[in-house]
Length: 55
Image 1 (cartoon, one colour):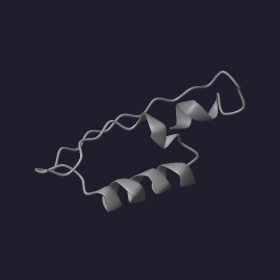
Image 2: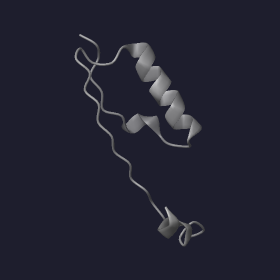
Image 3: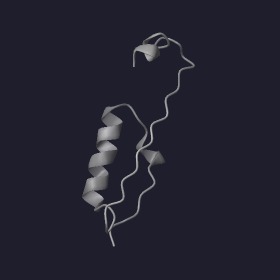
Image 4: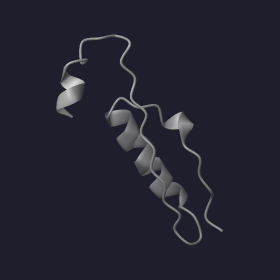
């Protein structure tokens, strides 16, 4: 993270974060809503989520 502080005020700074989780049966809708809300709290766009509905 220290290296990012040098660019913190640079408007061209972009970060890309990726995580994967694949619970058997997918994610229940309420859990997906929790994840989306948490991403919004971090100032991230939850619309980029790829998810599989619970079977």
